[in-house]
Length: 348
Ligand code: NAP
Ligand code: 3JN
Image 1 (cartoon, protein in one colour):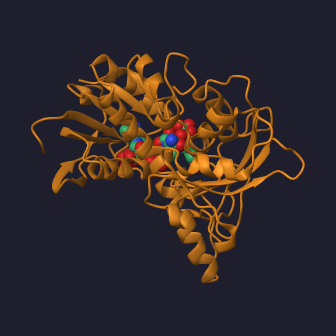
Image 2 (spheres, protein in one colour; image 1 turned 45 degrees about the vertical axis):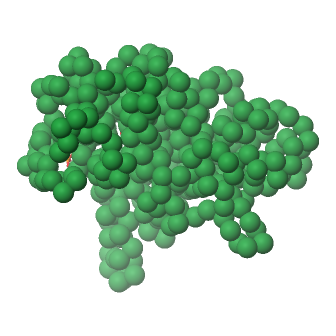
């Protein structure tokens, strides 16, 4: 390990997101002098490779955060509630991937392409938004800046990796069982620990996270509330329907948006998005060019295509937005926040 740089801790290091965090820190060559990997007692003692060195995973405890500069959390909201204050008390800046602090007015909720400046307001904890929110706001922000934004209606097509390592196994095992004509019992999806579980292989399930009393799911309410907070638009009209598909990784979204300005054509939106930070435009119907999750896996960008003007509403547009939910939706956005903290000299 290097002798200069930061002491970074990853909480939930053995999970689907944590594994991507370790890989992303390595790929980005983030300045690290010490890496602490934390999990529950179940995975404590296992070994992870980082920069050709072996790092032993330890059980997360309050004292694990002594001398840590930056702690990346992705072990669920309860673990963040338990340990993030312990990390901050010991001088660390926490970048939290869970929903535990996202709507706390004292906690910035940050997507660097949209609201990097909000990092300056942090009090020790910075929240990473939900994966579905992140890719959508990256695509919306350049449009909002140029033409204003009035309304957003989104339907998502979400990959199983968003529900963790066990959900990926469930999709693979069910697919195999169905092809081999063997019986199977759904155990994890749509919500781990819930009463009912449904087949995900060769299916589409219109439930991600539990239901709220208003008939929406928590995932849908996260998209609605987080979008307003990140974009500083409390009055933005947002509606969401979130659906789980039998895709391993890569969330897709059909986004309908209404802008403020009149008379804008599709080409103007294409031009805008083609040079926007973090976006790759893939939009050429004649050549059947459009984004797809299988092509987005392993990439940090948000891919946008199928941009069309609504046939009835002059200010209405449709677009298709795809991104790797474990990277820009989670690990990369968190490491990007850490890079922004270094750039803005908010961590020393
Ligand atoms: P996962 O694959 O199930 O992994 C869970 C991780 O949490 C494992 O490393 C697990 O360690 C660890 N963990 C569990 N209990 C713990 C404890 N008591 N103390 C310390 N670590 C503990 O789940 P995942 O998909 O990586 O997601 C993890 C969390 O990240 C989610 O619950 C969610 O809050 C957040 N997340 C956010 C987004 C987003 O949209 N930004 C997307 C996905 C997930 P063991 O190996 O020891 O069990
Ligand atoms: O299901 C997905 O595609 C994204 C899931 C995210 C998630 C899963 C479990 C708990 C979250 C999240 O980040 O919103 C949480 C949570 O922390 O509430």
